[in-house]
Image 1 (cartoon, rainbow, N blue to C red):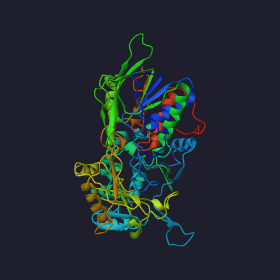
Image 2: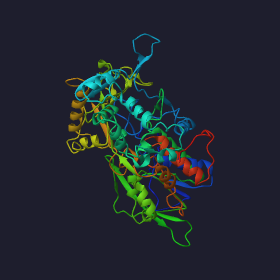
Image 3: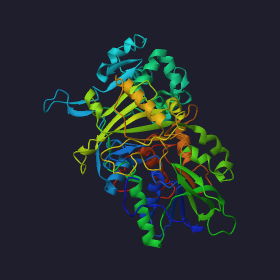
Image 4: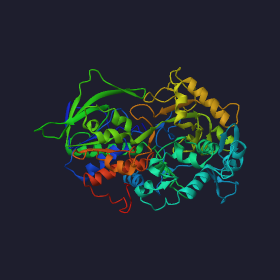
Length: 566
């Protein structure tokens, strides 16, 4: 975890029977935000949150690796936009969580002179079709490697996509999402069009490959619903990112602690229960005091994998409301005898999103060797299976860090979609045990603790080889530590989601929050949101449920004019 304090939320033995007003399934950010707001709003309301694994945070997962206690490997979500995302920014401020800039490039003057503009990402690398180039050289150099059309030459990927929008979709700005989605482009309504299909009509095949390769994310130009995909790049101008000083997982952990404090003070029982998997639920039956009866199975988590304990005698939880703060795959894993899976609308429309595979692989080094080739922060991009490489902090440069400690963190691979499958072939090899490091205490392993899956020697060796190639080097220094996370595995199914073509997603989004109109069952989270892939999307759906279904007033720190989406 990101904290070693003694008041960690969750844990404890789940009682055999528990009665609450609201049962929240999933201790990710949307589930914990829902519980926190409910407990704040009504002192008499009882709320319990149940998490399948031992870890709180869902797809926010921060890890301080051995030898770098003040540097966090963000295995999940790693940043937010304070100027465009008032929900997450407001919660962070309300909880008093310390933040810092998330650097996307070198903040130092580009010419070394004080007062000059920062270098930014202009000197970061791209390695495409075996040519190494700096970011500022991309538009000119790409023509040597891609057989681009006349309208594509001399442009960056962002400029090409902006040209597509300006030419074929000039009506995006200021339009209601439903009006925008229904508009016809090249003979077909946008919502019925796959984004890849649309780009294939207006770009050359080489132009599409260039945009995909140099953009870093395969999924950004995949065949998602074109109406939704075209809104991904809505952040114009100079984008400012921030992150949390103690890692992004500090947000759900703070929410969980707040929930536990309130619940313990009011009724002498915690609010958050870990290692408790929802097996299924049903109507409690005529004459029952509560509307729903939930079956929760106790679990055990080892090496990042969670299994049911045997014998699996389920605990019984009764509740009047059930909030499923879960991604699509986790919803699918709920027992088929539950009301959701009996409903034809839910069965069809739960498939309106696709889970996007994502993989992060971090390496720790004794020095930030990348600074020797002019790289400081932000990312470099390649068309190799590592795809994106991010340069993170050095321990001795952090507040509280030992100035003599030069241990430094690199996200050596941030890959998505088909590139994720490349790494699966290395997962069953011999575990990587790390290498000695002066700042890792004697007798302590230099690799991550056992709550994450084992890194193998083959993974480390292959990754180091690909990183060296992408940086124009014969080899790189040997890493002393490593950690990875594959988000395509159960119960997540992917790192984020995208709306499928053919669905009027704005209508699905609104209905999915209460998919069964005669039941008090709610769905929230990033999956079925208007900001997929962002914490903001998860909180938008949760706030929608709170305001529309529980009739909570909007919090004072959230602007009244802010739209939560459809």
